[in-house]
Length: 141
Image (cartoon, rainbow, N blue to C red):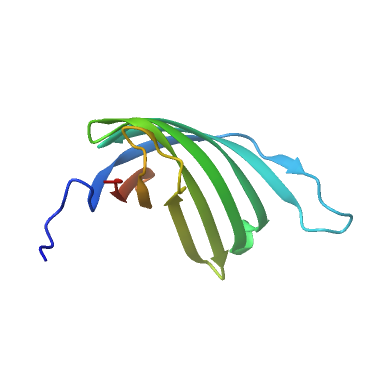
């Protein structure tokens, strides 16, 4: 069996994105409970993934002390390496003692248009304040 890329994948798309994060809004918590916050996300992807994503982030913990978590969902619409459509991304970010663990996955069943059946994960890195992504994905046959 060959390790070559097939029409279904695996594929890799790279580029940059900008993000506007809304002001934190306090969420309900029980008396004495850990405070939680909601923030809006507005992203613009450039490169091999081009388009806009809107989403919501929920966060808790003490990020200034190096211990916190966030989860987010974002809905992307645009083009991925020439294919038009949309899909959703799910985020889980954990930080403990300054160590970070971030996972961003394409939500199963969320692909539409020419991106129907898409699956995969997005890796992100920030260099000199610039957000870079690497999307590793497969398409349904």
